[in-house]
Image 1 (cartoon, helix red, strand yellow):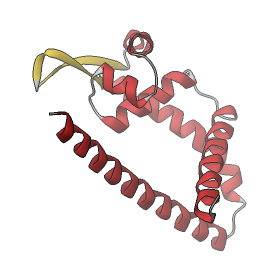
Image 2 (image 1 turned 180 degrees about the horizontal axis):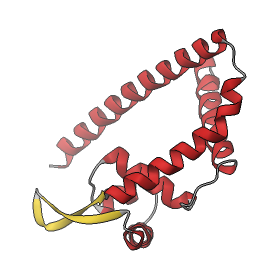
Image 3 (image 1 turned 90 degrees about the vertical axis):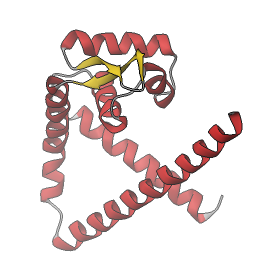
Image 4 (image 1 turned 60 degrees about the horizontal axis):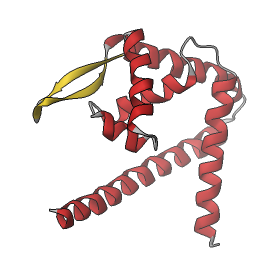
Length: 156
């Protein structure tokens, strides 16, 4: 394993642990699985069920069941796909965005005491790390889009 592999594993492990810790120590009224799905829909924008299922690595029937729960809460809705009026897209409602905002605020509130203990140098290092992670995500997404576009051209 290379140093970059070790770094990649460390980044993924730390990000997952931080998210789990903040979720465990936060108080919010949205089940975690639903909060995760709300965040996915926000990230991808209005999407077909099949796209959401692929992004979440689950079956289409499983995704349909999860989406029915969001719709029952009024957090997601089906809208007509402008590219194909026979199909629908899943989109967040105003209430869904508000629910996701509550989850994020609760997680941040759980982390706030730890942030309050950081000195200015630690805050600066953490901000540099966040900036580097954001840049890494942009590059990874661009590379994945390039691969997906090439694959789509080969299947036509």
